[in-house]
Image (cartoon, helix red, strand yellow):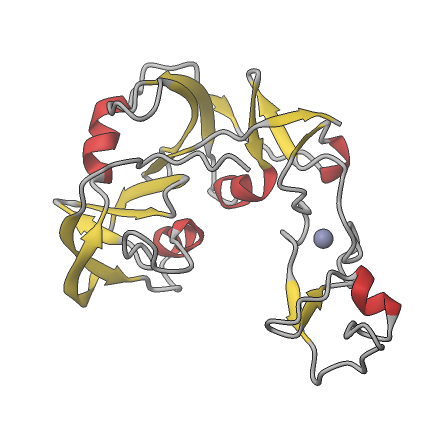
Length: 235
Ligand SMILES: [Zn+2]
């Protein structure tokens, strides 16, 4: 998969991170936009830049004003997303109400093969399986569920859409001729009264060409953000 990223070659900043409070709607809605692990930057928590709080996993970005945000301690290395925002954001667009269609209506798929319902969720087996003479699990079902010997895990067969098997149907949503990962859009769709527009944006660095981005905003929640596109083909 060609990993498209909003932040190629961006120089890190040191900024304070914040703890999200799940009982505050606006903070809870930002949580899914954080990264799950520390890679080049520490984006596992939102951070403050000036008056605004930002959360990003480098492919999605959200920002908003928080009332008296709970500071989480020391400053960490984060990408300069406020500059990116200031560079590309526009309000004078044809905003449309955003609604995520049902999975069955998706007619594009990306080569990630990710299941749009469970995002290829994995579960760790309670104990190691019995092995055959080739050193593979004797139980063929475990093999079909993409057994990973490193962490003794399989795909989750309880997912009603993929049943833990290889998924080759639609998993990308086309908006204005550009495809986006369906799973990535779920936290956008969760924002009340969210609107969208697809925009050709110049990310302002020599490593990537201008590209289409999904912009979203909710005036009622005072949140706004953007999502990178995905390479996808018709199913
Ligand atoms: Zn699934």
